[in-house]
Length: 378
Image 1 (cartoon, one colour):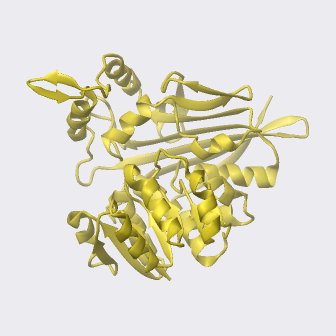
Image 2 (cartoon, rainbow, N blue to C red):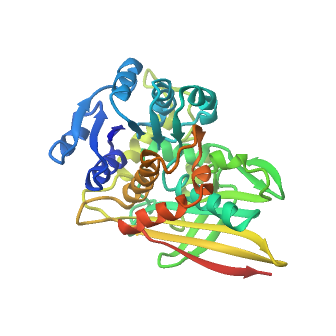
Image 3 (cartoon, one colour):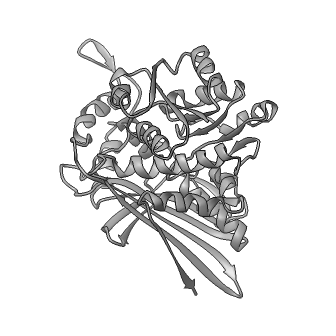
């Protein structure tokens, strides 16, 4: 099996290493950055420097492999996925682009391609858990996902470090949040709903409404659905102050003879404040609550994950949880265990018999544990 990882930043690099360690086959890493590729060269991974914006090059590289992992930036994700699908290659993607992935469903079916998108931790693992619940428990009435990537120890002026680019985090804080309440699809300002939450083994946190449901919005039978992003207390107050003062505005303003946007300046300033220092520990938190009706009662199934930085391999928890979920799904596609032609979301994978348990077992083998417990809701 020849597998190529397109985009090897922190998470793409972890994916490539995991594929090699699991004996998945011949692994190639592609990126424009020589600095990103260099650490992989001595780990049994073939490296190839190429610009993912060059569609002809992407198509040629994809054609040389059996399976493609899309792990590039969101700005290039949709175009890369379209190119790979058009080349007739199966693909698992974690680029989390803004465009509608199902716009490529017809093309994928025409090419006979299996394409799984949003194959990370959330979206990704959370969707798999939902799909499995629907398949095994029946109709779901409520789905709430609490998720956050945080520094292991809060410090600094905002008690936060970003596992992704500041631009992506600010987008999370500014993009209107789509959710479902009382069976009615709604769109509200990001962070407009906030709750305090005692997260097991992590302490008191704050959760705020964000636009992370993505493909889950197709699930029209669920009366309540939302994603809530987790942060240390006080962080959202600071973010709302910056947002309300216009620091996230994208419209350019004239300053010192140049046109600059407040958002670009803010991203530049926050980049250093939000950057993890070498060896700094992070933690990734996930709690998925799924309510189903059973024998006159409402049963709540709580799926709980807390994963920490792996100091032995210098791998962040966000890279572990996102990357290992991606490689677990990729292994299902590579083996033919998941073979639905067309564009699939992770919840489709979760609905497929046996796939959720295989993914959870794959994660557990790598030290990523998801605990599940049941509660009765009056």
